[in-house]
Image 1 (cartoon, one colour):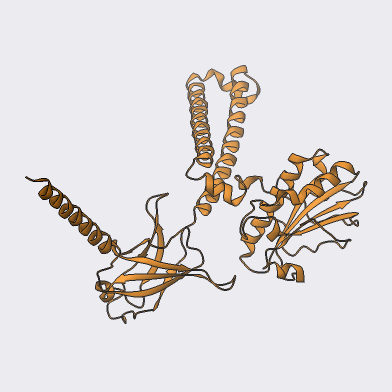
Image 2: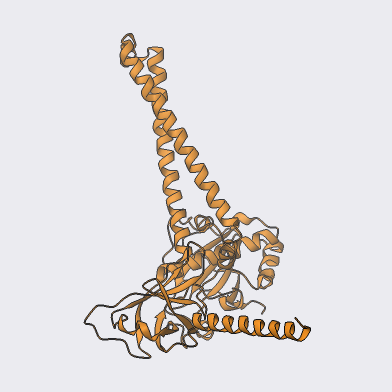
Length: 394
């Protein structure tokens, strides 16, 4: 076979492979199929990207053409879907679109349910009903709550076991009325076996709890989830109220630093700091001046869910508190936090910052009584005390 023939055969084979690849990719993206468009709106797309698959009845039947952010903070994210024409007969006006994940940490895709026979068919450009996507953060917070409940149950079991051991010791020594029953060998043997079984049960439960705690800690440092904790700015939600107090002192603050949250936090729904140096003036003042108590007060904007905004305010207050304590030397027992959560009556400055809320650090003179520690979530209707205001450096 001549060199020219071999070269020609190589070129033909290469073109054939290229053509096959084009048809495979085109088929996956429905470039050669008749398609139509639908829309779906979600409050949060949970990491969904353009080009993701659209499954109808579990079958790859389309792609996510584009994703559009809302023009207002109260709006929803619009997902534009491009579906194969063959699905037009089974997707009806009552079909529902949802964002799902392949496995626990896989890629996101859009799943569209079958409609009901007899219902009108969708038209090109129609908007489907949706259900909110499942958030990994909600699962982890629920796991933390279950861990706390398990710890309380273990404490109760340990207390009961201690009482059983005390009673068993008195019986062994013959103390009290029950000690007189020590002569009944059968009864003594049964009681001893019961106490031993209880101790074994507690040991097994404690081992299981320790394993669960270890797994949770490992999960926080897993490289697949590390970005999640890093983005929200904190790891353990049980630590949010460790330095919280109820409201502000009744005294007048001698110094106040105020900064819009938009200038110091990474995202509107995150407690991750992006401008830590903005708090250097606060830390230097606390380290070089005598004071009685200082409060980190955080509020959020007028929109959003009240419970979520309160949790966000608590997280931001804790993050600011910890940064100041870690970088400046002073009596940190006098630095406390309070979270106001969602604030309806916002100032003109806050409205100009798209409703992110603000952070205030109020410093009170020596002798100011410390506010009572917060044993529950602070009220979102708390009214801040009047004092002089000083803007922090930009």
